[in-house]
Image 1 (cartoon, helix red, strand yellow):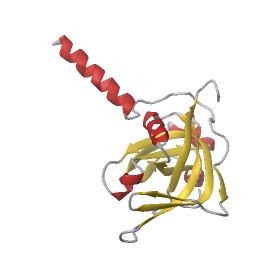
Image 2 (tube, one colour):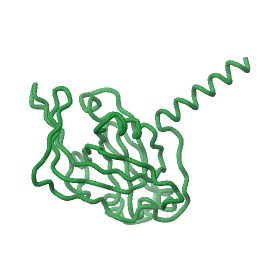
Image 3 (tube, one colour):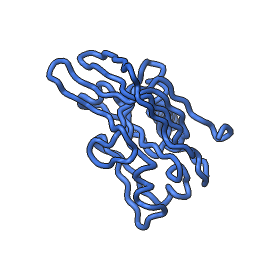
Image 4 (cartoon, helix red, strand yellow):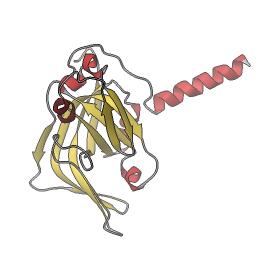
Length: 201
């Protein structure tokens, strides 16, 4: 019986690590001060994955705290982007603020609620976002799987729009951090991703 329990614990720990489980606690304080960087691309590049054409329209990079992450397995979107991160910067990277905000993800959306506002509503909306991640290669795909809630990450790549050749299906990225609701998520072609450790912050 003890052997079975031990095996189950090992399997559980392995799955938690593989799926980005667990949570990183860094304590109070702003961990990612700057807003995301974005600049238009004058000559957009395109990538092809199966039936999909992925067209870059803006260079994009961000240093942010992972407020939540969600894996997706079903739907056309999951063919390209199997993971969403909800990211926060400015006061939305401060755990003393985040302790007062309930954050969740479902159906490719990010949801939050509060009993009382620790910071203004508009600051919550403009300093956090749900981001659909399209890994540019297998190395990035592997790195994405290892990211945990609470990590401080640096991510760079491009904001993109997607079209399907077979039927014209489209998936478009938000172009600003100040929108909300349907269409407000960023769709990112991720060229690089790394965790910034507590010692580096």
